[in-house]
Image 1 (cartoon, one colour):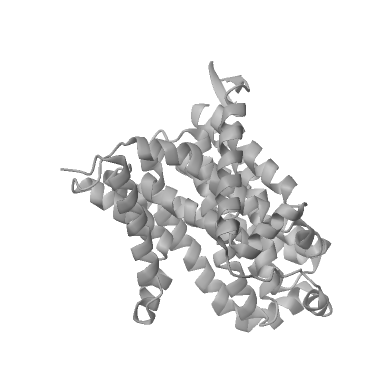
Image 2 (cartoon, one colour):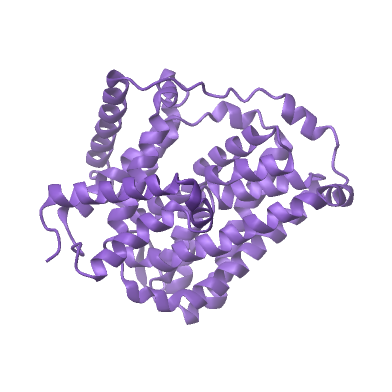
Length: 397
């Protein structure tokens, strides 16, 4: 009989997430978790447990996490962002990052338009969520999924595509690092650009031990903001448009809540509140995100595995278009392969992958990858919702 008691279910899921991260730190399992990252385990293990009757397919715990856990995670990730550091990247790096985002938007629209006949009716929501993942990372993927009110099952094929196609592209970029001089000669890249980036002070945050007071402030502030914005969004009317003989909701109340919490977090990131990152604010945000992902996995449909092939082909085409746009932008901007690779992974892989790619190309420029990834977090919320709504109009047209 599945766990029904809410407290027992919360304890089980949090223990499961803890166990996954504990195993990921064991050196002998490095290769396993490099190929199948913790985000995949946090989603698919609860899905399997629900399939075998250990976890319930529905619970008030899942509803609470979807309603408030996501807002907590997004607020903490945004309030600890350093927007000033993004501005210090310079115009060429910023334009390459933006070109990667535009490539994801265009690629998603083209790929979905070509493959929608092979995909289920709600696939546009999954593609919208994937656009969030490929413009910033997992937090944006979950935000778009919740904002659209998409069924939990849509993430099953999306996470697989995200992992296989996204990490496959990362592997190819690491291989191409040995040919960056040839690429830079082809684009006629400015050889002094990397030196200027290396000399830039990105204001790296110095971490310090988290105290009880720090943790109380982080959790209390995040939950307070989440509840306040949830109440506020309930009084904001939805934005609907007429399309194809039906009313299409462009911005739902859930979407309003997400946009408001992100905007509030970014606004407060210009204040001393951003110093919460020194004591683990972003870490608590990421923890809330992984706990939320476990609850979403517990509600997913294992039957969606059968849809992976069509999703995989669409994902490969999608990412190919993104790469094509970035290569064109690099040629026009005379940008080095370093900026193409780092800007691409800041979009597709987020904070977990961009610094690794940046270091592979230029060992002292990991901060550039991290700052670009933060830019991806911010761009992803707004551009992914835009992409998802365009896909929704295509699906209903």
